[in-house]
Image: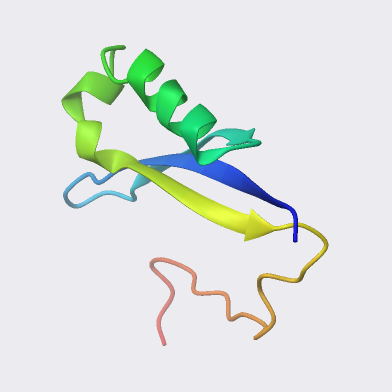
Length: 77
């Protein structure tokens, strides 16, 4: 089973939508962790160092199978 490691950064901002960034896709978890070390002192990232997350994804596999619902902000229900 072959997988990759996806590095994301989410900056949670009160009363605003979160600022989510896909940083990169890496062959190993160590590679993703090394990217965090390279980025954590850069502007923006250093103010939200707890926003990094690494997720492992198995290749050639569906990872979202349930469907989805669209919620529009500011639209009456």
